[in-house]
Image (cartoon, rainbow, N blue to C red):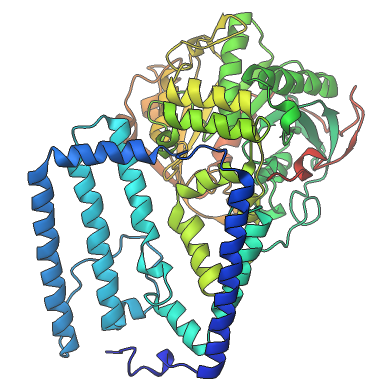
Length: 611
């Protein structure tokens, strides 16, 4: 068994150079600290002191622990007993014996992939010690917070996990074998470079840490978001893109896509080989996409209803003008799908039948089980967010939204880059998906606060308590065919949450579960031959073989009879939509109809950067 003391890989190469590098690290650290203090003083600390309501959350935990002393005592004894077992196994290994580990990382935990976490007794002990402590901490919190309400308990467990992830031995130089080897073998050059990366990220984030997840190797419209097309309409909220056809004939009914405005539309057009837009064009659809503006303070008071009128309604009018077709197939992705659902309810109440069908990518209408984002939704955090947006001129800066989403997968999207960029001193590799993830957008205050309060907090749409322009929104009145795509590992729109929409819409519904998560579960071209998807035509059907209304089944009942299919779900959707898309007609080119070409895709709005 290896040991750092007699392993040449853990010996310093040049002590003198190592010393010089450590001096540079110390000097850079002083600069970092001075800059932080300067920025804090300049900001005046006007923002909320506790934006995540950690004080209230852990005060509730402390009270619960004090009320359950027996549980705390039992947990302490269990931890002591587990540590005694770990010491015995470690001592046995150091004497040359073989001992199975008392605890292993969870499946999929990539932090301990270096072989020395298993082969080296010291690092194996550190690893198991951390896992025991982290699991003990989370189990104890779960047991002692049992008498609290579900939302508070969930927040406590989430933030406890965040703390456990932060103190992992992988995040520190002396307790991460890969980092320690790199430090000794390079005489500390990795730390010098890593600190330089950290300073650059702080500078780019104007004092807030903005971790680079991808090399800046992409240029929108050049090697990413390159599907050929034109801008054919523009207003304050959207640029409407119409893409060039690649087939001689196209379906009569055009396809209009509403991506989330929390991110940019080109998640649907990253590269030619994984572009949903290119693929849909290739299936004979005339594809239009709304490219949302990256709002500034001038648009801070744009409301959710404004996004309906100036987004969805304006786009429907424009597509009709461009194609001459009145009834249009639509797609809504994530929050774009939530807006589309609410809009369909409004249109149903008004007798507006311009939408022929609606597809929802990872989109929720019922937020009663809306996943980990609910952790950030309580009165205290919403008020803190309002104050933050007010201080920023009425918008939520993109990096703050990005940090929230990254926290949901902290080990993959935060700590792995802390180790790679700052401890190992590496440059991030070019990765289109992570480049898109970092290309953030701002949120207008009026729209965002309405979304968080009325959907996430109050679940008003699903409960029939939401109105637009004094019109009550009732999803049961929506009779258009609906396709609901969800993903098995989606942590933003969990499939259980998406499934609830099967009971809300009043028309025929097709529900599927795709493999992977919120992004890869959607962006999975057939050519990749990755993942799988599940259907259950029997559960969704009525006696005549067609589903005519809300599913009368639980998601567990649906899963009990689901059928797995290998590969992408896109062909299943195409089979469904093609039947709703009318006859084949000569292909339409941008500018053929009543709309003039305003410029080349991907347009101007998508190129606006946010803080």
